[in-house]
Length: 278
Image: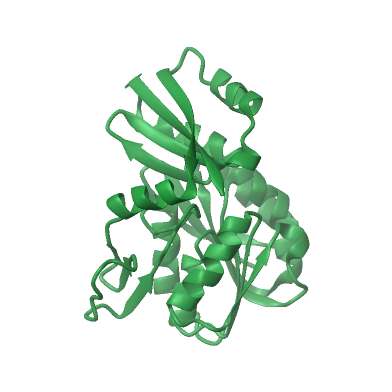
């Protein structure tokens, strides 16, 4: 599979401005981002690349950012070489060790997850994934039926399975993420994750104890009504992929309309993860 790599370079930029730009790029299909010395690289499948959509996103930042960007095609095998060079093991809350296949095991950690991300989002390094993993580590998920929306590499579902979840449905609208979830489940000897490719239309009419949704604000707002239909009474939703202001208030208000109430949230940088309960 071929990908488009867009390399952004900035002469002046604040971290929150980069986060806002990344959020807008995610809305038009970019699903992997890598920091560089003077900016970041953004990746999107060749089939999903839209030059006009990219120009429209950048027009929103006209006058705010001093930047240049360059577009190039990149083969999947070249991408794999790049992430292998840059992927460092990650430790979450001294409990979970996330590594690639070429790293040595660290059996002193209670949970070890082996991830081959390819072009799928979700190695735990991004703040949103880290916070979602922290929620999973601090929540009793044993024997629970869990939905993981926007599953990326499947890392959240894999961690929940290792912590004793009974059954998991992992959904992403990107076929690369779907394949990555299947492969990473096998790498971790997980057999109770069912991966599906699609959006809210493929969510089964199962009653879920917990919903994990690390996506972006607009998609979450669109899908909350469906989450309300499938979430059990007293069930929990953990959201991430958005900012504290104005996103958290918008999501909280929409959840209220469907009988889902805010419990708490956490924040790393400008990114937020939040717990809601039905």
